[in-house]
Image (cartoon, rainbow, N blue to C red):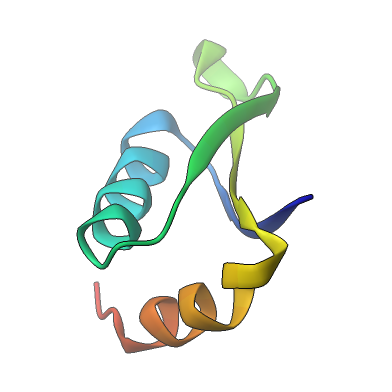
Length: 64
């Protein structure tokens, strides 16, 4: 079962999160869920349910 851990406002942000999680060994998927302004879209970043806690710890340590 895949679980959403982040919702990104554009593909660049989603890919950045995906890269960080994957670098730490977390399985990750990105899926478009809606269209935003200028065709950019809204994207979900998903991880397996068993890796949610690890993903959360990684995401909380990221500073933009």
